[in-house]
Image (cartoon, rainbow, N blue to C red):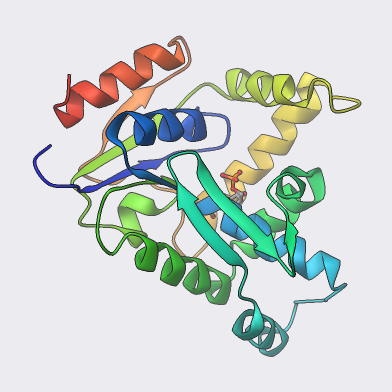
Length: 222
Ligand code: DC
């Protein structure tokens, strides 16, 4: 790739987006923009403050004041809220569920989009999420869409739970992911879609290394 462009990686939960995005950012020397972490941060802070954000006016007021310290490198965001480093807490089941709900709200999507565009203004980023190639960076130089079978995605998520208490059953995890897929695909604002000009990769039977290699070849650095 000649100049430091923008690479987007979209797809549903468990398709391998974050791992591939991080490795790709490291290979290219780019920043890794983990858009999901910003939705999770909104959910996390709302919970900390015990806020009920059902009304748009309350949500708008909350977002106007919400300014986490945000730095990005090739491994992801470093997020500090009210002096507390929150990256780990963002992965909790509550933040996961609540971020999926809040991600249907136009005000939240605009808040996240503004921050991502600011961070990507000079290029040199791998932006990962559900709408990066379609809405946030439609002019990106390279777009990828990763998918995988539901059972495979649920199993990958279950493995991430190991060592963190009771992992849900595979059936429960599949139901949870299927519900999130449905919410992500059917919301009115920026639904999860395959960008028209994306390279689609089904990762069901592929190793991370194989996916990374395919992305680098597509970008033209292999
Ligand atoms: O990728 P993730 O699991 O960290 O994302 C958390 C939630 O945020 C997910 O349920 C969907 C939402 N999200 C989104 O709607 N758009 C994005 N670009 C990224 C995440």
